Length: 104
Image (spheres, helix red, strand yellow):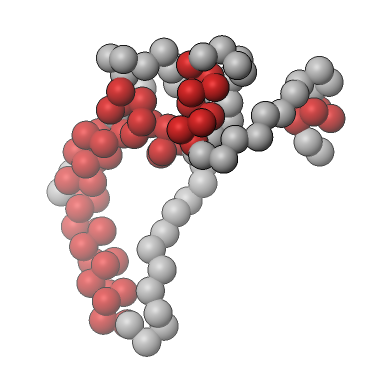
């Protein structure tokens, strides 16, 4: 079911890039936009002093992301997994996330 079907009267706007979406919201061309959280959080927290954007305080969905490696790169996969585990255990992951995406 599309948004237009679920919410009659809703109109979609095609944009080629996220920058165009954010600009459309800032300029009032659209009232709101459903966009990827990480990209938008980064943009917002890097430009919040000059931006007219505000982020909703609740995620609409949780999308997991991952790092892909070739099957034969088992050593690299082990190194990545160990490094990510260490970053999470020692709090570095949270500090990096806070720096680049902020919290709300």
